Image (cartoon, rainbow, N blue to C red; front, side):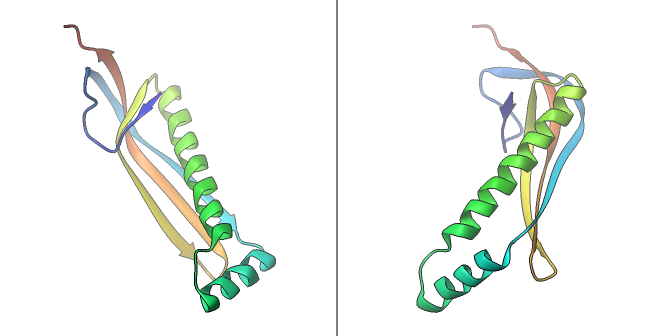
Length: 108
């Protein structure tokens, strides 16, 4: 399934707009990861543990959104937007939304 942040995909035309689809993931960060991230913040550098958590959350939210598009008969999601929010002290929410469409390959 094609997924794009753009409203069109080169070489394809939208035959049918189906509906808005979303995918949300809420994850907790464990105490060890929080401690390691705090140490990284103090001494500088990147927090690999949180970067991995963001990557996992984004992947899960996009997959959930793609499944919703498939249920509607779509073969692509366009205009995708991904948002990140911290909930409370240790919860991370990743939300992906876009428009489920049915694309056909342009001839020529």
